[in-house]
Length: 285
Image (cartoon, rainbow, N blue to C red; front, top):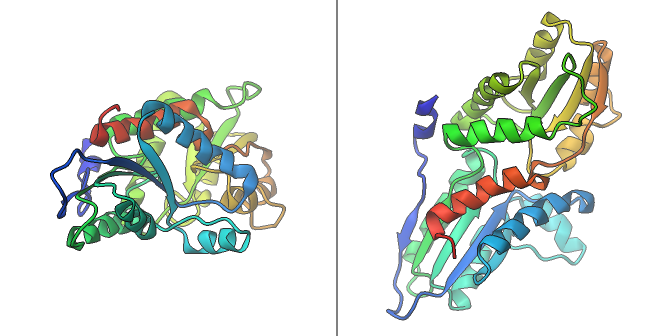
């Protein structure tokens, strides 16, 4: 599966030089997530932030959300979360010369590409930030996928019996990086033959998963999100009462369904992977 780390147009990091003084660099970390407007799910994001703060105790840490819709919703509530561009501009205004941007996305898809382009735009600034380095998202290397598979399966509720299946809902994408999802199926199968992953907007689809479940004679399914937070997709598209939710569709197909609304960011082992990616570009201090 090593070829996955060589997806076209993706860079492990983007290091950008801009004009600046020769003084001691003033460092900052910018954590960038898609975001969430659900208060109950924000704990997963905060958990990752806490791990980063512990790994970088002497470094300024700030946040940005890539979702315009979520930022707008939060703004109406009086919560101001900046976009990546706004956050980088503010860091420059505040005198930070070296910024380490860590993507908290799952795959290097459109959101990650846009983040790299935003960082690249700051090379054209006449003053302020001297260097911006972008760290890779959760899934990048073979070892990342192997670690994620082991971590998630280890955190399936203990009540689950061996013949019962675990189904993870991922977002999916039309981007070429959607290949990480079928790749994750390979890594899940290496750890637990009754674990599956489907996506909302890519492949594998829920229909693909259902076909596999029926072929194995599975009767009960544990349904969990393959996302940083158990946000709108998890609460509504996965676990909602609507007839089009995954829970409803699986129930209609004859399966008994147990839902676990827990974002991946709540797991220490998952947060550690993002911290590792950040340490690769920023060191450990």
